[in-house]
Structure formats: C-alpha cells, structure tokens
Length: 258
Image (tube, rainbow, N blue to C red):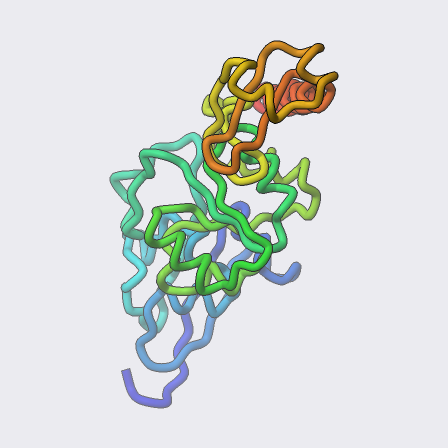
C-alpha cells in the first residue's frame, strides 16, 4: 500500500456491539477510511468498539485474529459473544474460557460490587482504584473487568472485560449474570459483602463476645467472614437479602422463558 494513500473497508457490527456506535451508523454497513496497514483491532477500536466486546471477526468470509492487517476493499463483519451458538472453532481473538468467573470493578460500580458479592461471585472493588491498577489486577488474577469507562477496555493489556450498559445497579446485576451465563452459579451468603472474602458457618459461642445481648438471645445461626471478621446472622438484614435473591432469580427465569 502506498504511503499517504487513503483506503476504504466496509465494516458491519452485529447485535450489542451497535451500542457503541452513533445512532445513524447502527445495524448497517459503514465505510471506514484508513491509511497505511493498520491491524483490524485498531480499526475496530477507532470506531469506539472495545476489543474485549468482540469474539469473532470475519474478513471477506474468513475468520481472522486481531492482528490481521486491514486492506483496501476488505469487508469486515464483527460479532460479539455468542450466548447460544458454539463458535469456538472459528474464534481467533485469542481468548480461552475461564475456569472460574472472577471480577474486578471500576470506581463507579460500588453498588454492583455488593450485589455480585451477595450472589456469591468473587468481586474485587475499591473506590480508590486507578485504571492502571484495575488493569494490572485483572491481568495478573485473570479477572473480568466490569466498567462504565470504555477507555479501560481499549487498553491492549485487557483481554477480558465488559462495558456495563445500564446505570441502575439492579439492572446491572441481571445484565452481568445474563451476559456471562451465570444463572446456575449463584450462591447466597457465601461471600462477604463488605470485603469479598468467603464466609463460613460458626458456632454461636465462637462469636458471642462480638454480639449485642439482644442478637445473641434471639438468633442461633451465625456466619463469620474469614477476611474482615464481619458477623452475619439470620435477622432482618438477612431476610431482606434473601428477598432480593428470590426476586433476582424470578426475574432471571422470566427473561429466559420469555
């Protein structure tokens, strides 16, 4: 390709990848103008679609990886995660399924972090995390980055991440569970909402010195966080969380059947 010459490729983004495009460019072919010989990954992100949202790229009818060099006249189809269709033989983006689903969240998703922990998912969160730290932890601990910041997901070191569409925590938790197909992995009261460490059942006598008299007299079943030592028992707060869990599972089932 001649230096300085402008070339064109035709892009089509499918399904929820259109969330990242301007309204006038959604669900239709889009002409992309470029110079030189850019990688298709860079060309996708130049159109505001994070590479972590992409599972399959097809150029001129053939699956390619992120390193494919774009050429004049290429026709590029870009697909998100396929929830019901096994496309593993065709995927060339370099990602492998995680054995255990673990998350790290950006500073804007504190309420979602609590809900994820409440449903039993290993979720790291602090309200003072810098972007670089989130990326480092995600990379070192094989955690999925959940964020409302597209810039984080465009970093080349990020291989697993998801842009949260909703701004409402209750809708966010359903969005994450549906997106990663975690309906069967929900476990109530197994992880500390405060610090994310596992919690375990303990005898009342082991924690009696940490309880108010009224609590010790009324309740008999207790749980203790292995990390921060927080104590949980089946009181009104427990019942509210159990109610949230029942509502969540009902709404998830309703969406699946619908």
